[in-house]
Image (cartoon, rainbow, N blue to C red):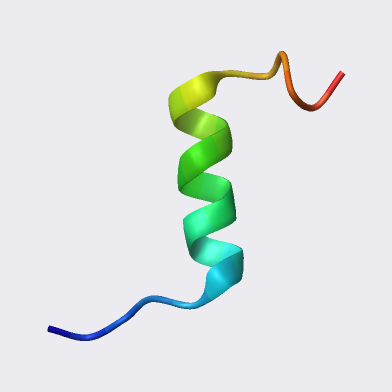
Length: 23
């Protein structure tokens, strides 16, 4: 199993939790 880059994981986490963390 290939491990995706941290940046990609970060984006996926943001998409899952929503934009609340961004604000």
